[in-house]
View 1 (cartoon, each protein chain N blue to C red):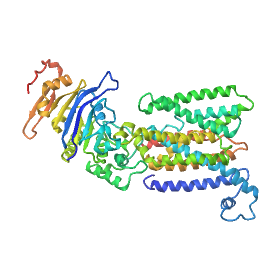
View 2 (view 1 turned 180 degrees about the vertical axis):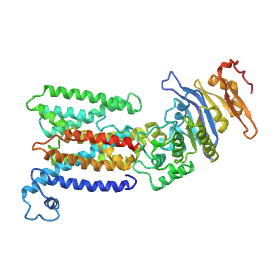
View 3 (view 1 turned 120 degrees about the horizontal axis):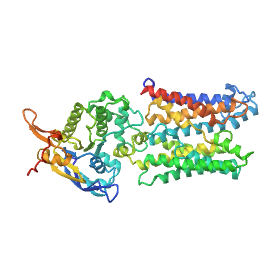
View 4 (view 1 turned 135 degrees about the vertical axis):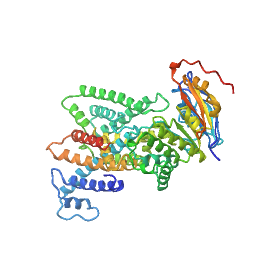
Length: 337
Length: 273
C-alpha cells in the first residue's frame, strides 16, 4: 500500500486523523459537548464566545480535558518515536523503549516518592530521575569494552531492570496496604488522570527538544540499523550517534513515564504499524510513528475515561488492545515476507 | 592518479599477548588488484577491518595517498576507502535503493537526509553494477549474488579510490563468482585500487597483480601470482596437494587443481625462484 500513496501524503493523512481524534475526545466524557460547541470554545481566543456556552462547559474543555489530551499526545508520540529509534539502534523490531530499564527505574522512583512524600509533583520528579539513573547504570555496565556493543547494552538493561523491579516489589510489600499500596499499583498501571497544566508546561520543552533531535538525525538511524561495524565503514561516528539517540529517546521515555506511569505496547506496536504504511526507512517512520502514537494514545485514553463510570488504568487498555493487534501485525508481516 | 596504499608494520590483537597478525607490509599502486589469501581463521577479515580503521591497529600505519588514516575521522576515511563486507544481515527490509544511498552517509550532514543528488548517485552506482532493476526490491528478497552486487554499488556511491572486499564470492555459485571477479577487474581498469580477501587461490590468477598469503599472523609469499603461487606454497597454506597448471589455447592463465589425499603424495619440494 505504500507504493500508491507517498509516505509524505500518509503522514498528512494521519495528522488529519490526529486532529479529528482530538476534537472527538474533547467532546466526549461525562458532560457531552457537541462538536460545534467544542470548536467554538477552542476558537474563543480568536472569536468571542457566544452566549450559548456556559462557563462550566468552557472549564471542562480547557481545564479538564485539554491538558489530558495534550499529555496523551505527548506521551503517545514520545513512546512511539523512542520505540522506533531504539528498534533502529538495537537492530531489532521487537525492542521496546523500556528496554534499557527506564520503566523499571521510573516505577521504583515513583513508588519510593509515594511512600515517602505523597506529593504528586515530587512523584513525577523522582520517577524521572530514577528512570534516567537506571539507563545510566545500564549504559555504564555495558561499557566493559571500550565500545558499547548492542548485546551488552540489552543484557545490562535487563539486569538493571530486574533489580529495580525487585526493589519496587519490596516497596509494595512494606507499603501500607490500605492507602499507599493501591496508589503505587495504580501509578504503575499508568494513567493520565493526574496530569496538570504545570506538568505539561514543564515536560513539553523536554519532549520537544528530544523528539526534535531524534527527528533531525532520523535518516542516520538507518545506518545504525545495519550494524555498528557496517555504519563505521560508511563513515559514521557510531558511538557519538548512538549515545545521542539513546540519551534523547531515554529522556523522552522517562518524561512520558513520569507523568503517565507505565504504559506498555505503544513503543512496539506503533512503529510496526508505521512500517506497514511507509516502509522501514526511518526518514518517514519516525514522523508517522509520532503522529499515529499521539492519535492512538488520545483515543485509548478517551475510552479509559468514558467506558466505565470509574476510570480504567490506561496501561491495562493498551495491553488488552496491543496484544491481539500485535499478533495480527506479525501475521501480516509474515505474509509480506 | 589516486589510490596508492602503503601499509607498514600493521599489527592487531584483541589482547596484547595474542596478536592475530603483526608486521604486515603492503604497497598497492593505483588501479592494482591485491588478492589476500589464507586459510580460514587466519585473520583476513580482521586485517581488512584494521586497514579500514574499524578496528584500531595495535601498531603500524596505513597511508593512502600520503595521508595516515589513523589521524582521520570516519567520514574522511570513507571518502577514500570503500568497504564491502562478506555478509550483512539487515533487521529491516530496506529497499535496495535505501541501502545503496546509505553509502553517501559520509557526504551527508549529520541532520540531513539524502538529497536528490545523493539518490541520483545511488541510481548511477546501481546502473554501473547493472542492477538498476533491483532498486525497489526489499533487501531480504535478494539472492546472494545480487546482495553482493548491491553492497559493491553501495561502496561505489562514496567514490572511493580504494575498495576493500571481504571474500566477495563466498556463498556464490560459479557464474556469480565469475561475474563478481569480472566486476573487480572492471573497477580496477577504472583506476580503483582493490584489496580483496579470497578463499580461492584461483581468484588470484583471475584478477590479481599482487598476491599475499596471511598465515600464522604474518603476510607470506608476497608477489605476483604467477611466480608466487606454486605447489609448495599452496601445500604450506592449505595442507593439501594442489597442482598448478598453466593452460594455454585461449585461456592463458594458471589454474589450481586440488588433488585428493588418498594418493599419498610426498610433500612438494620447495621451488627456488
